[in-house]
Length: 630
Image (tube, rainbow, N blue to C red; front, side, top):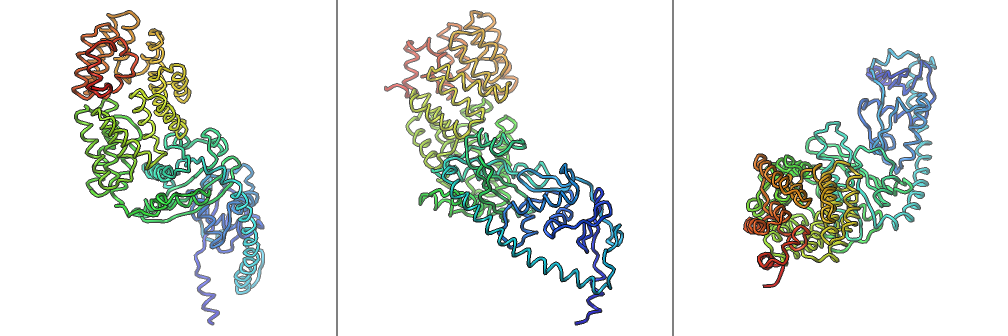
């Protein structure tokens, strides 16, 4: 061995010295100095500090720290927490101002870091031995110490892992029925990448919700906890779940890294964690692997069909899937601009990969929502929604979303039997699909099957308890069953979440109007604009002010034309019913029938139409819509 040559090469090592606050860390000597004094610190806290300095200004996940500091060992988070605690004590960081915790993700340094050459570190080595002896001592001691530490950590890891499994023996029976996936954290630091983290969250929820034995909280309620500082036991109590899945996403080019953790929330007990590095093309396979692993960890029995589904996933086109996730990000906003952007992204995705069913499912959902909100005429939007849904089903019959969209289009054609079959098919495929649940509940409600509708709406609420849309739909089901006090409770819950939410204001306006309190109804209806003011006009008519009602009707009509929105004939008909003009009301209802206005689906159950029920023309319309036998 050429000792001199080896020493020469070691002398050329360009180690760093990091300065931060009152502290310095010498990379070559692995020494921490605080205010110039060398601090005696165990190897693992030193290595944790080294990793944080190497990634100064960035969040270092728990998983990355465990992998870097304890490579190849089965070590749980408690070991990392102990190392961090010792490091903070050494730094004098009593307020955790130097070493910051990023809740449920990892750690980062909270002070500026400056790099200078190792030779400029303030303190000199404590031992003034010949360089060869110092080098030998520093090379030998860590290996001896490491051997001891490894033995201790292996023993500790097995002890903690046994303790962990002991927890898992007790927890799974309580977790099996209830699970929430909290919003995945975007580790890129770029808000423009939020769509990716949100998309990963939604896709995992979708895969888990297809497992019949699981109750999985839907996306809308889970997303309310994005950036919210609440403890896991608090979140679990609010969502009525026992298990919580947390995760983080980091993308680099066409590679993606996802870290996930399963926690028994009532006691904040860690049950399982894993990190995955995959190509973007394998993202669906990854989501299904995650769902299968989580089901395994909480001892959920999968049916043979569920096993096949989770084991079967083809690669996706990364560019097309990325566009699809952007489309879903904007679709979830449920605004006119958001839906228009969603349509564009879904179209781009389908052009990139015409054989991917997801973009077509997204398009079907988008056209349905555009029609629902009056932003697209039914004779334009419904055929588009139907074509997109059929295309998606042709490519993949196992997706619940296009079956639900197809059911909606069939209902607008008054093909109630075929619509019910599609709703049921969707919920057989994904019993936790909340959009399918609340739309099916609404379908049953407009058919007058209230005893069936209410339980379905309640199931949707259990899975999405904080969603204004689900609360509103459930409230409407109660309202259409003439259970006005029960409906009012749900509408008020919306306003508890957001005092200005138009869905809650509109819902309460409906209740007061139906209960013969039009003036109180007006006080709520004037604060929202879901019907462009037609509902307010009808309420003024019911309050005995026909002049104001007609003025409001003209104003609402002008507003719709100015916004280039669809003038829904059913809304106009309601105003004329309230004014007592049955002939004009029937003219508008006939127009609604010809245009396939979706509001006409309420004909059988809507309180506002009660004055028309004995009119032969109204009865004939019910028969043509197949609400009554021929």
